[in-house]
Structure formats: C-alpha cells, structure tokens
Length: 235
Ligand code: DC
Figure (spheres, rainbow, N blue to C red):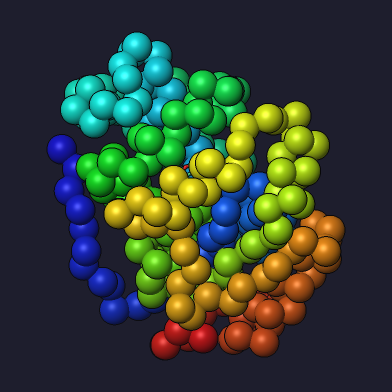
C-alpha cells in the first residue's frame, strides 16, 4: 500500500521540472535536455497512460472511480531506469508500445483526475527524483511533485500549433478536450508554478527551445560544465 509522502527534505532535489499542456513539445525538450546533461529522463504522462492501460485491459470503465481503483489496487507499477530514462512496468511487463493508443488517449484524463491514482504515482515520481538527477516532465511537477525543484519550466504553445504537432506525430486525439479536463480537475490541475519560467514554443523549433532553456538554466545557477549543485533557494 503506497502512501502520500509530503515530507520535504532539507536539500532541494536535483530536478528540472518541465510542465505544460499536451503536444507543447515538452517531452522532446525534456528528453534532449536529459540526454545532454546525462540525467534521467522521466515522462510522468507515461505513468498515467500505463495506469489507464491497466484499466482498459481489465475491461473496467475509466470514468468509474471505484472500478478504476479496484484495478489499480491489484496492479503493480514499477519504474526502473533503463538507458537513461525511467520506464513504467505494469506487473513487470514493459508496455511502452501500447501507451499512445487511441483508447488510452481518450481515457487517460479520466484516470488521471482520481486522487488515489495520483498519490500512488506521486510516490514513484518522488522516489526517482530524489534518488538521481532527473529531468521530469508532466503537468504538476513544479507545483505538486517537486515544488522545491530549483529549476522549473512551463512549455506552452498555441492550441493551433499543438494540434498540428499532434497530427505530425500521427495522433488524432483532441488535445483541447484533454487540456480542458487536465486543467479543471480538483487535484493537481495543469498549471504553471508561480516560480516557473514560461516558454512559448509556438514560433520555435525543438533545437531553439532546447537552446533557450539551456540559456535560462545557465542564468539560474546551473553550470554548463562540472558538478551541479542545487541552489539553497528556488532560482
Ligand atoms: O504527457 P501526456 O500527454 O502523455 O500525458 C497524458 C495524460 O496524463 C495527460 O492528459 C494528463 C495526465 N498527466 C497528469 O495528470 N499529470 C502528469 N504529471 C502527467 C500527465
């Protein structure tokens, strides 16, 4: 049984928090940045997608909270780090190839708004971020998972650009519907942390966004070379 752990360690975690709406480009930016730094890349959306997949495979209704929890309670989620990225296993199985299916796209925001599902995944996410330098992306990393992260970014883009980027990925889900549900839910809604730097990527390509974020990091106590230490207070 996993519990919500709200203890705040004295030393800030070596975590770069990257939040933002669907298809804003945050995953690509986080992945590139993690590879550049040699830090662990953590895609927390994949964790919600894995929980949703478990619900779908069990033939449970993703909009029925007790049915979802019944499945989640008997499912084991683990997050080993492989090749520099955290992978989500469902009952020991790697489900990576099934996480972006249409049924998962449609159901994930329903599952992600259930507080107990979020509490279980919060424990996993904090476990990774506290044990190794990580670039972690999602919706609530800077606000809820690591409010003490020294470096926080909120990557945004216009709705039109995001819909186009989604299409280029070969995906047809409505980012607008998902964003509406993700930003209006009661628990840990999608929002920029008060101390996050907001980056509008609408007019930038991936290389430009990564370069921009690296320049912002360099101006916020983040050395380009040598050992990295978290500053005592949020930058
Ligand atoms: O990043 P993504 O589009 O793969 O995320 C899938 C869904 O998971 C998203 O619609 C909302 C949810 N999510 C969340 O609620 N909190 C996070 N930290 C990450 C994702």
